[in-house]
Amino acid sequence: PLSFPLPSCKRLPSPGDFVRLALERQAWPEQEEPGPAQPQPEQEEPAPEEVPQKPFRIALTFDDGPGPYTARLLDGLAQYDARATFFVLGCRIPGNEELLVRMAQEGHEIGNHSYSHSLFQKMSQSAVSEEIRQTADMIETACGVRPWLVRPPYGDLSSSVTRALSEPLVLWSVDPQDWKLRNADAVVQAVLSSVGDGDIVLLHDIHSTSVDAALILLERLSEQGYDFVTVTELFEQAGTPMEQNGRYRQAGARTGSDPSAQS
Ligand code: ZN
Image (spheres, rainbow, N blue to C red):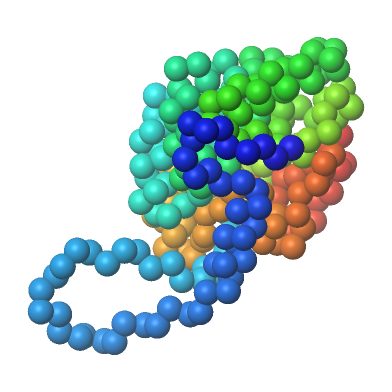
């Protein structure tokens, strides 16, 4: 499902780039500790944030956008050298194409969350696959990258969905109910109380409070040793690359739950 960047796009990452980058990061030598209390003549520009190996990985995912707060979120992600995955809606793409270009250029992953956010289990298989295809076309036209991950609306993994789609289906392992809480601190606490290595966190960048929460989480989880990676990177780095027809909730087996039991 790879495609090449359209001429209008600058350097765009492909899944191959994600893997290469992941390998490069793993191969980086330990950063040398700066000597203690070396007197500096004068502060020049602040040193760019170092990127040491972090012990944990997490995939922040943002559904239902892009929206009016997505640019602010992208700014924050860049500040923390964090990558995320955006499961966008086709119906929200017109007028927001530049946000998709930015996501791709800044190393984020774009996934497919359908065109209209309808409940797939009430639709025919052909209607389901048509919505996904249509949205993939729109994403590719907007930013030159064709998505290969699908998150069905409402996390619907009914048999009509799994029969209609061959793409990897990505759900989540941490759901702070941000769409319901609409309170950044409550969302932060809900995530921090349950998050662990390999988790996929569900958030929605169409709510200002959710973006606020994400920006706080970037700081807190960075301090706790988390590296923020895309969904594809999460599974690559866990040694279990994603596959066609796969269903995914988290990398590794922290809870021991069987994702296939959901279908
Ligand atoms: Zn959604």
